[in-house]
Length: 582
Image 1: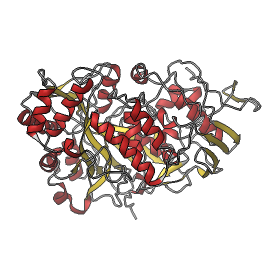
Image 2: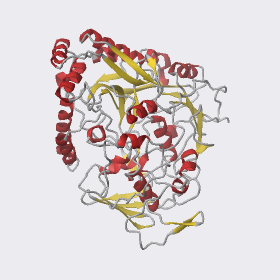
Image 3: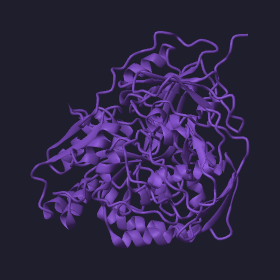
Image 4: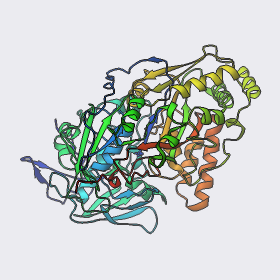
């Protein structure tokens, strides 16, 4: 079924073009999303599955040991059976999407946005941006990448009748229509490609030539350019509109790799180098094979035995020793991820001042330093605010006493709020080996608050996200936020602005909304100071209890070289090399 293509503002004078034998009036533009990509943590007890969510396939090992000239085999988490990088929190899909698709910018390993499809994005006032595209870019089906390719894609992403999770990347653009927060979670969970009303399009997007377009924002936004490397803002080919179901299973992109076969939720996906890609990040290896593991211990064994080349989800029990075990083939690096416990602040017993006091009591009953050392083997740092140190604006003690262990004060707070007679259940995603971590968290709460604490396991982060979106899961959950771009606003606005698509706690505070909106209109130190002030207010309510700033803990086999990780915590896949036979 064809997906309605949003009309492009200012395009009435352009001749419609024919696609598949019919008139196709085209117009376009394109986390997070935030690239926003959030991976959820666990606590290992009972397992349950969200409605319509299939349990991921059992962990299996490759039957073939990679040899010279073979694709690089990388460990991957379970992924959905459809490809849509604009509507997922699963980090595996986002990683692969970034290899298949490229937008105006890409991010280097330090998080700096550098030109990719764009030759220039110019502004004199941080409100109106003139975009010029490099000529010669083509999608893998041969279609040229044009200004229409971007404007159409961005209008599709912003469509309020079918909201995708990364749509808030376009919130600053003139004409963006917010989605009713009460309806957003249910609608966001609907599978893509269903019939929907036609989007009115973003009035702030105007195509001015085959390779030029303008972006007009509702207000000055000095950090806007930083988000333009997110894969959710990549251009889309015609097939994404004329055959969205086909595109979801056979992605067509313009990145350094092509997908072999079809997208699936099975054991493996294989990418091969895209020889038509001629920009600055070409594949230096024979290809990539993403192999799904549901058990990190099996994956780690396969690295030791040479069947798996790259792995960055390690079993928790291996964290204290993996650096000694793998030596120069091990990585321990701070990245742009922050872990916490997210609470549904619109549901009892977490509403109002009493709910805030209960959350703060839980925060003050946790010995983060000991947890980070004994559970994570020092691959986590104690969180002192809502963003990690790699982000400009990180503050060394913004959370203050509320994020430090004080069992007596925690007990007094909880007692004053009426206690937690029913105890505490924390939901988590079992595709990360976080059972030991939540067990330790619950032990702290049982000791320091004298309350019952258990965990509820979901088979994957996507299953947990769906359960939260549909209201099946109504309790607190362990969550890790991965930045889409390295600015403090990315750790605040998508998570805590009222009605934001990725605001899964339900936090709603008009004063915070105004503070965040004003902060992003500023630049430099004043911008950071305003954002920190908004963050202090958020921490006072504590919708998310900060726990840890995350390191990437990763290993690789001797069969590959040049394995590096970027500031987002993702491998620099294109740079991994495998020796070829001479």
